[in-house]
Image (cartoon, rainbow, N blue to C red; front, top):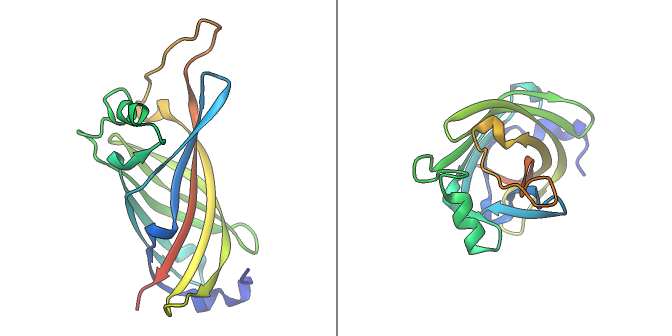
Length: 185
């Protein structure tokens, strides 16, 4: 792990490395288990100011069609108008509005999350996992974070009642971010 004293060395422009990153989610299913999934097609950039982390920024664009829960029928339903309406709203975006250093290696990243043309402010606690030079000479940084959102806040209200009480899909969805980014030359 890199200490806070080396953050100035991290200053620069970065591109998210989708091949070594994961943007995922977890939702309760039938009140008894969790379904995990991810988005496999996304891009992102970050500007890191190691001397003043609050001046840093990031943006991510996710292609909604890339949703993957390892079940084609469920993925098709999630892409439909019941959930993501991906034909009408092909992208999900996140753009930072504020970054605060919360601890030596932790940050509170606040930004505008837009799903289905609805934008809400969300704060994601991120942990800086470190920096390294990879075997190809690239300077890499890593961050991990997660936050829970209400899908109803984004107009995603479809559900089905269960005979035993409760609903098929939880309103609360945990978003998970495992980010590796490469410093631009």
